[in-house]
Length: 223
Image (cartoon, helix red, strand yellow):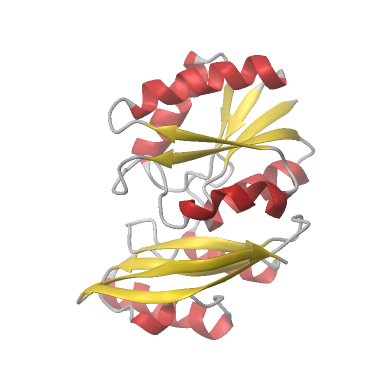
């Protein structure tokens, strides 16, 4: 079965792709959507400026498409129809974990395009999921945060065991989701077990408010 994976460059889409490959699916293409609205509730936008590196990172052909400000779901349906014909696809996979909005829109677009929709992370326990990422050798960093408890030094560096423990403590204290599914933070994948390359990024932290900061990527390369 041939599957197109939606790939944003975040930890969730990377892990969803990982699960599909381990399950024996053929993934001939990834689809990266660059939203015109940086506050899009359907697509991940932080770090999308280095999406041209995703194909080299994953070793899989990556189609990069700009999404309109309005009609994102309808636009996705059209793109999936084109990719289905181009790559003889059977299904599409996404890293939706907790967002009903994302899952419903991705599923409806897939169905309208004549494809099966897979969401291998759906409703996965957040703490267990984050521990699995660490145990299985995924490397990622926070590229932004929008929640109380985070500090500028949390972003722009690989999440290690110590930092992960701190994030769990924040989740317990503030009632936030341990995998950031409440919009607490956004991530950028740096390497994964089945990826042939890794990402090296350099940049600076921009503090945007008391509980908001982002990492501005100034240099990025495959390693």
